[in-house]
Amino acid sequence: MPSMKGAQFIAEVFKQSGVTHVFHVPTALFQTMAALEGSNVQRVLTHGEKAAAYMADGYARASGRPGVCMAQNIGAANLAAGMADPFMGCSPVIVFTGAMEPMHRYRHAYQEFEHSQFADVTKSSVLVDRVQRLPDLLRQAFRTATTGTPGPVHLDVREEALSGVADLEFVLEADYLQVPPFRPGPDPAAVRRAAAALKTAQRPVIVAGGGVIASQAWDELQALAERLSAPVATSLNAKTAFPNRHPLSVGVVGRYSRWCANRVVSEADLVLFVGTRAGGMTTYEWRVPRPGVRTIQINIDPEEIGRNYPAEVALMGDAKLTLAALADAVDASPAGEWTARAQRYVAEWRAEHAAHRASDATPMRPERLCAELEAWLPSDAILTADTGHSGIWTATMIDIEPTGNNYLRAAGSLGWCLPATIGAKCGAPDRPVVAFTGDGGFWYHIAELETAVRHGIAPVIVVNDNHSLNQEWGPIRSAFGGEPPAGAMELMNFTDVNLAKVAEAMGCHAERVGRPQDIRPALDRALASGRVAVVDVVTDMHALGPTAREYPAIE
Image (tube, rainbow, N blue to C red; front, side, top):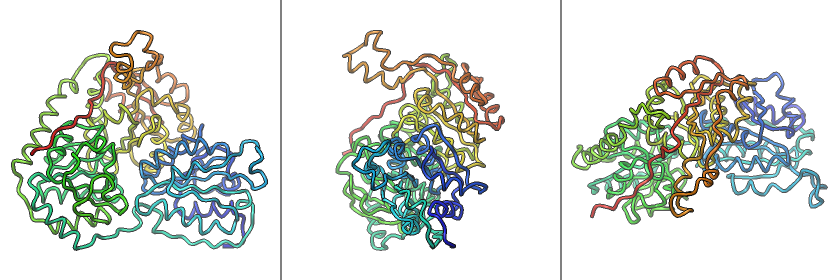
């Protein structure tokens, strides 16, 4: 490349690497923003740094490519707070901040502080202090974000690196522009040991995690499950890794789960973990499956194998290649009593919730909202969900077909959903993107509706509006030792606001819905509007999501 400023070099890297959106709050990297003028990279100015981080996260998860966000020095604190979700959700986000200048350090400079907190919420956090370091550190950022278990990377860029001029070499490493960049295969000897272990199991079960989605290994997962006649449970991240209505599907396992999934996994005598860290969310704090159960674990990151459940057989490799190799190595097993038992549990679970899913009650049951949304969702839609009740309702009450990358959920931060949905629509502009959030989560970043309107980004936002954080009802009762006094409701209740009118004032298409039969027509109009659309659905404050259960093992 000809001699250029560092800020211009960063812009050229964005343009040539296929970055289509940059989510930011001024004033960091303004020279880079100027160099992007007239390019195909859209500069999305947000109302807060945390929202910018969530937008980059949603973009990365929907597209499979690194998402980019940035903020100035003081805004880095908010941006770092937003990194917790992509870090926990294994999302390839590249975050830029303006670094403190050397002569300002340790002198109480205005709006400047050390950015050490990024080390705890990223795979890598580096200082770019010279313009000559931009080529190698930018290449390394893309490598780190996309390889192994994906995750966010932080670049703290000093003014010297942006304003400095140098002859900078640009090398486009195409392998690192998407997830996964590489597909390492498993050790054949380990595959044979895993096949032998599966042959001895009477009640095998597969627990699939987000690595199956990242690897696009859903076909291989289904092929192995059908060959083994083994029930399949998924983590919340992997909800669409296996067809929800398949005879071997038992649903999402763990904390935000269907009890049928927890029961099947608890009763298994061998658990095959694939693409999951077997963390507390997926295993209900390591109670499902029970400690001591035989396990086989497939993971692209060898450090994660056996972390939570000692693995009888460890298979390090890409999920797609490893599942295919294992399917070739195992003997076919016909469906038997174990498969029938799993199917019976699923049928019992569905029967248990059928009445609420068909309820005409008003205020509306959230289960009925989920049933209407399930019936309406376009086959190519991406559904996003906030944490808390939104995660529980979508995990348990909405079957999403077909399999693949069409369900994105908050890894832990309430309020993630709205900005992440905007980012997801940027990452997948040709697909319908639909959010499921509660009013509690929606209020966090409601200002970003204006961002979507201003930039012509058009997702559909469905709000489960019970004007409360009603998931806190159980902890409130526990804190008061029973029925709390009326004044305690201030711990969870909000003003009953017509959110459709708020959204309409911001330029959105918006409707408020109070009857179940009106949901699907409202969704049709929302999608057809071609604008960011809010469907504010009034639901029953007293309707609580199903709680997780644990079950004893079969002796």
